[in-house]
Length: 156
Image (cartoon, rainbow, N blue to C red; front, top):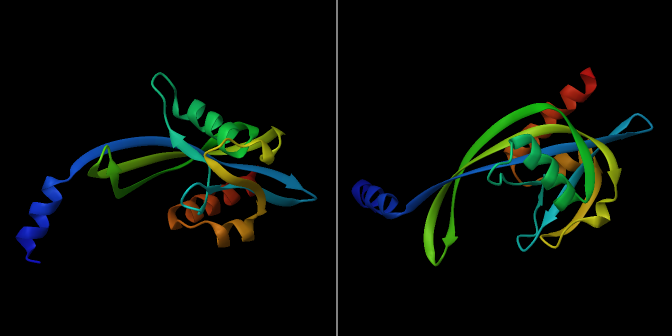
């Protein structure tokens, strides 16, 4: 493919911006940090809980809601961790669309609830040790967010 044909193809793709929020929800058991992670449906990949920010909702409110919906737990926002940005493409209304995604990540302390109470969008939610989470999470940017969260937890 020539350089021009690549540019022509990308120019034809519709581009949408998405803004989401999510969190690294943690608890400490016997001095060990555990993080709530989710297995997405239908992709079957381990990720941190996150989702779109609804109209009229702050990033912090969306992160709390997404942790409750996807991980089944209640958690309190402690501090922002990072804002990640990436591109992906997918079918949207039958049209191949390019997405420019931004995700606001928050450090969140577990308050109550059970990871088994997740919503239908998630195949499984579980508590994982930091090492297990870093091994299981599919996306590098999420592993980087977890590493930053652990540094922040150790300073608490």
